[in-house]
Amino acid sequence: MTEEMMSLQALLEKSADTDLLREMIGFAAHRLMELEVENLTGAAHGARSADRMTWRNGYRDRDWETRAGRVELRIPKLRKGSYFPGFLEPRRMAEKALTAVIQEAYVQGVSTRSVDELVKAMGMTGISKSQVSRLCGEIDGKIAAFLDRPLEGEWPYIWLDATHVKARRDGRIVSVAVIVAVGVNDDGRREVLGLAIGASEAETFWTDFLRKLARRGLRGVKLVVSDAHEGLKAAIAKVLNATWQRCRVHFMRNVLAHAGKQGRRVVAAFIGTAFAQDDAEAARAQWRQVADQLRPRVKKLAELMDEAESDVCCATDGMRNARRSG
Image (cartoon, rainbow, N blue to C red):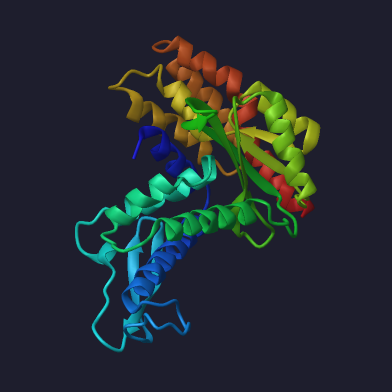
């Protein structure tokens, strides 16, 4: 798996509870088992055929532990002979291969070549080109349906993030921006709301993305958390009209670059004391105290804290206001 695809996986996994990734891994695994068993029996499930060699005999349940969580599998049983999916054998890189194919579906649609490689990685045999092509369409269709689904209810808290991956465009491999929106609804449920691919993180791209979310039903947004990308901030103000807060993770990544390798852990813990305060006023006071203590030794870092105070420390106010009005 490339570094770019690993970054997309990390983006999805850190952004949500991985339900979608787990569901897609389960869907693809079940379809591959069905295709393999179809070839072993000589006929599709329930079909009458002169080529049939044996019949199915129900299923047996088995859990498959993956990085996206536990996937519940229903493994087909045969009346004659036995069947066990090769991807469950120890040391197979099946989960990694499945995840890569699902991520490809997000970015550019699944290719038959990638599914061919997936079949080999999972230790499966006898699956035809037409079956591979059909599976590609099914995976693409599942992803498209999820990303275009209506958004019901209110989503007071939204996180927006992006990464860059390599994708094939017009026969060339180019770098594209993958942007994702994750929301938390009034019940505290967290899920990916949308994902889009574009040439860059320009304001127009973010604006179109947020407007599409609004057309799908996104409403009730009170606080949006993201990095300090100017185009993104402008799009949020234009479309969502909600309180914006700078993402602490992005800020810490930027500020720790000025702390030196030896001092990063100490500085991170030091700044973290501001986030641990009980209210916004105390957080800001602690923030300024930390900045002043760091200033004599790391002036640039302290200046970054000065500039970011209102953006980073507004989180407490924003969250409290959102809960109070909700």
